[in-house]
Length: 65
Image 1 (tube, rainbow, N blue to C red):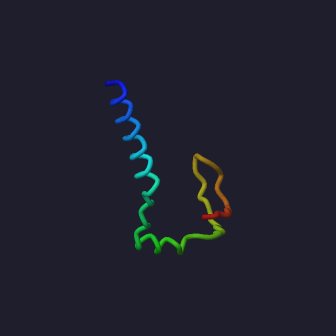
Image 2: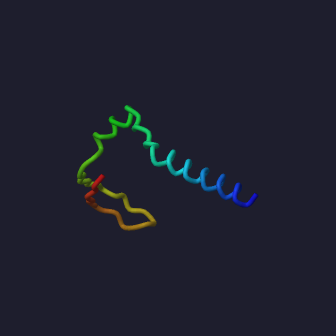
Image 3: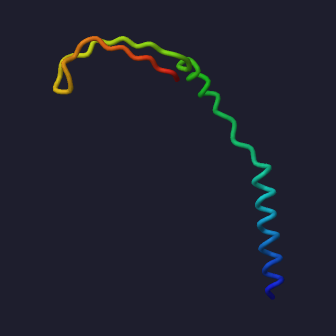
């Protein structure tokens, strides 16, 4: 009985490993191509208003997306 259970368990694990090795990740949706516009390096300049968080003034940032 133990041998039969061991055989079934081993077979199940091997089958699961074989199936998961063949699975491919899904292809991205075509709508995501529209987001390619935002990829790259961006420079931002802004004028911050004074608030309780700080005095305000000009600020710049550089982003890589």
